[in-house]
Every structure is written in structure tokens, then in C-alpha cells.
Amino acid sequence: MLKALAPVATLLIGVAILLTGQGLQQTLLPVRADLEQFSIYGVGFIGGTYFFGFTLGCLLGARMIMSVGHVRVFAAMTAAASASPLLHGLWVNIWSWGLLRLISGFCFAVLYMVIESWLNEKASNENRGTIFSAYVLINMTVLAVGQQMLLLADPRALTLFAVASVLVSLAAVPVTLSTSTTPRDVQTARLDIRYLYRTSPAGMLGALATGLANGSFWALAPVFATAYSDDFKLAAGVMTAAVLGGAITQWPLGHLSDRTDRRYVMGMISLGGMIVAIATWMFADSSSPLLILLLCGVWGAMAFPLNAISVAHANDNANPDEYVMLSSGLLLMYGIGAIIGPFASSAAMSVVGAGGLFLFTALVHAALLLYILNRTLRRPAPDITHHVPFDDAVAASHTTSQVFEKSIE
Image 1 (cartoon, one colour):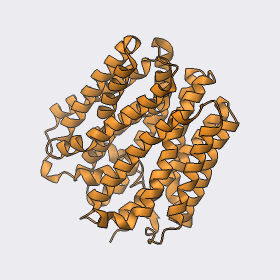
Image 2 (tube, helix red, strand yellow):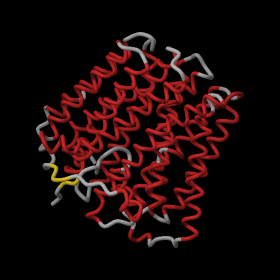
Image 3 (cartoon, helix red, strand yellow):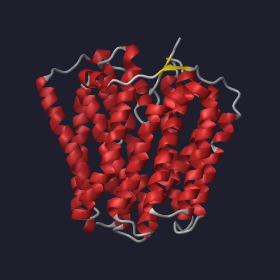
Image 4 (tube, helix red, strand yellow):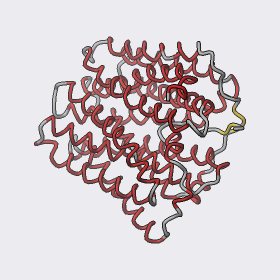
């Protein structure tokens, strides 16, 4: 394992630092927005602008990399992304935060694109699963660490915004000083939504549903937590519990999907996510903080692996030379869902209270479950011998690893 990771060690160190700062921002901003008494619609707007910027980054990042190369783009995006949290702390209002989150979303989409294309370049068929297993583990772990850093200082002060800025800035150091060779030049970028739907409607709608549910959670879960406790530990704990829940079930559910029709696993996850979300909505008002943490952890265990399995299912139905086009379309669907989700869930929260966040995600998972049940009844199960291994599929599922085409020897 160490031999496989050695060529990408400096890159993974940079990723760990970068995502620690990202994890801190994801929890800090909704908490501070709630303290500033931003309306629930305002918080949803801020969350939606991040994913709008993320989607723009997915669409435009390949051209940037094509023009100036991976290292220069990484340095530029970390500089811009590190300025954003500082400006959040200095310039506190809904409209400026919406603009800054849009910029952050754009920067992180392009950064993920650089990181994951670099990892793909260094991986071989023999060690790709090991490298991306390490990447996913780092991703989940440091996001949780960053979320817990909310407890280091008062979110009303500039301190935590400055810490997030410093972390994102430092991420550029190991990457830009790395002596390893950079990925090959980007050749072209393609996107075809109609082809995506023809190839895998279940995979496409799974990515959209994941964006709707998970995008809402990232944007509004800290607000949900602060409705039940003035202690910021609960907000940090809710985010961490969900992330760790997703980390625990990512591989077991993924490898289960390798051995059966992936739609069955998608349906099982949707059913589980719906049940837990309904329970959270119904019982949060009368629950202890410990039970809320437990429910959010189980919800994350169901919700977070769904995107990876949706991507794997879509790739099962594609030819190898179509993976890039397919993955870019799936990521776009996730981004669209993550733009709409915070607005819709904030409306639900304004009507039924903080638990409306989970009522909305329950409706999303219920709709996906109904579609999958209908689809499996109408279309026979595919031959699982043609499954794309989950280790390869997960590389494209969480962020932007295959948004653009590049030549592969």
C-alpha cells in the first residue's frame, strides 16, 4: 500500500489540508448565518450559490486546465478559495456571502478536477483501488476534523474564518513543490445529457436525487442543529456524525452492489434514507442531542454512498471510451440538484420547522425509490459480470474526477 501511495503522497497531504479548511467552512458559515439571524431562505440561497459555482467550475474548469496546466490552476484556485473565508468574516451580509460562496464553489470544483485527474494519472489498474480508497478515506476524515474545529473559537469572531483561509492556502505548498510529474494535457471536454438519459436513467436520477438531498444537508444541517441547542457542539457533531456514517458504509454498500443489480442497492439506500429522515423529522423536537446525532449518523450512512453507486450503475451501461462524457453529465445532474435542494428544503423548514430539512430529503428519497421500483419491474436486471468495479467507479462519484477527457495510454 505504501508503495502505491508514495508517488501521490504530497498530493494527498495537500488534499488533507485543503479539505480540513473546507470542512470548517461547511459548518462555520451556516452557524454564523444563523447567529446573524439570516432568514432560512437566505441560508438556503447561500448554500445554493455554492453549488451553482461548483457546477460552473465543472463546466469551465477543463478549459482553464487546458490553457495553463494543472499546477498553475491549482495555485490560482487555492489563492482565490483562501481569500473567500476571510472575506466572509469581514463582509457579513446575505448577498456578499452568496457571491463568495459561488466563487468558493467554482474554485473547489476546479481543485477537485486537478486533484483527481492527477491521482488517475498516477494510478494503474493494479493500485487504483488502493489510491482512491486512501483518497476517499482522507476526504471523509479531514472533513470531519474540519467540522470539529468549529469548537476552537467563537464563530462570531474572525478567528475561525482566518483558520479556514490559512488551511486552504497551505494546501498549495506540497502540491506546487512536488517533484512528481503532472498529468497529461487536457485534450477536449464533452457533455451530452440526452446520451446520459438513454444510457442510464436510474443513474442519472440517482445523481440528481443525491444532489437534492445532500446539497440540502450541507447547506442547512447546522441550522437544523442550532434549532435544538445553543451549543455549537451539536452543529459540529451533526455534520461529523453524518460524514462518519457515510464513511463507514461507503465500501460495504459499494461492494454489495458489485454482486447484485445495483438498482436493488440504490432502492435499499433510498428506503433506508427515507425512513431515517421521517424519524428525524417526527422525533427531533422531543429527542435528546445524542439521539439526534445517532439519527444523523444513520442518515449519512444511507445518503452519502448513493452517488457513488449511481455512478457505478451508469458506468455499467457505458463503453470505456464513454466514461468521461457520462461522468461529466452525472456531476452536472448532482450540481443541479444541489442548487435546487437548499432553496426547496429551506422552504420546507420555514413551513414545518427545522425538521423540514429531513422531510424534504425523505420526499426526495421516496421519489427515487418509486422510480427504481418501477424501473426494475419494467427492465430486467443487467448481467453483473459486466459491472465496473466499485473501486474505479467511486473515483468519479464524489467530486469531479472525470469531468474532462484526456488521453490514456
